[in-house]
Image 1 (spheres, rainbow, N blue to C red):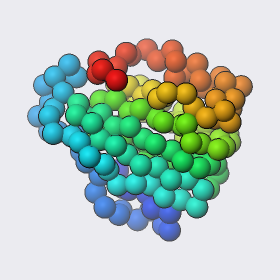
Image 2 (cartoon, rainbow, N blue to C red):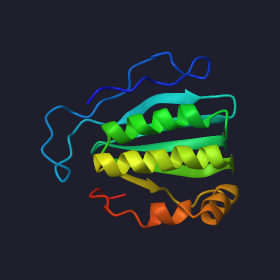
Image 3 (cartoon, rainbow, N blue to C red):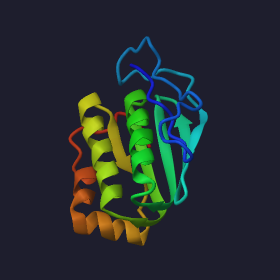
Image 4 (cartoon, helix red, strand yellow):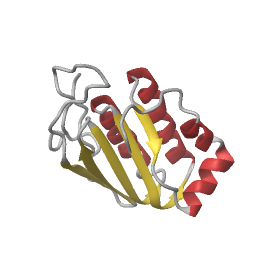
Length: 156
């Protein structure tokens, strides 16, 4: 799989540092490749910060802090699509999200779409913040995460 460019706040089209890739020789999802740990390159925009914590498997947990809005959602969408492409399981931690608008919901839905195409599990961690939970529930997007067709084979 090709690596997607790392989005940067100053120029969303610049390649930036390389992100980790899925190991080339994969034995299947129930036999995770060893060696993934640490952190990946962060995403920073004017309104949102995202850190990636790598776990063996390969799995990644993305911690979002700030606002998922019109200014940050294009970069978040590309960042999320990359992690979905290179991971077996992506967990979104929305506990520090202050605001999500329609473009932010679109970025999450694009991530869900790509997860379905690549058979990657995309799930929400813990409880989202109150503003994020309210937006996800009112829009109906929350049920799409809860009712994901594929169960993650990894223990969380």
